[in-house]
View 1: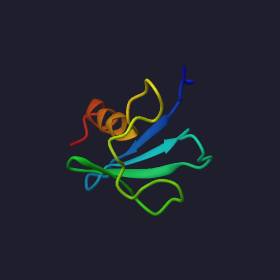
View 2: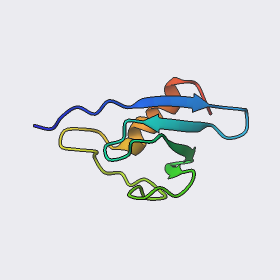
View 3: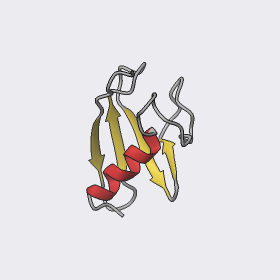
View 4: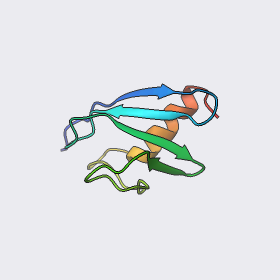
Length: 80
């Protein structure tokens, strides 16, 4: 059984490109900025241990992938 992961996702949308600031990624004490580029979720700047383009891979056993969680957060916020 895997432990639950609690993420905090803040959306910053100035009308150009929405940016998602994510805190709570295991192994990363700092917030990490991502943007959704079509079907791809990309890190805004290089972060050790996080690929530039997030793979469609579960965060842990029984958990969704981070890319899917971020796309869902963007859609639920009503961002394009």
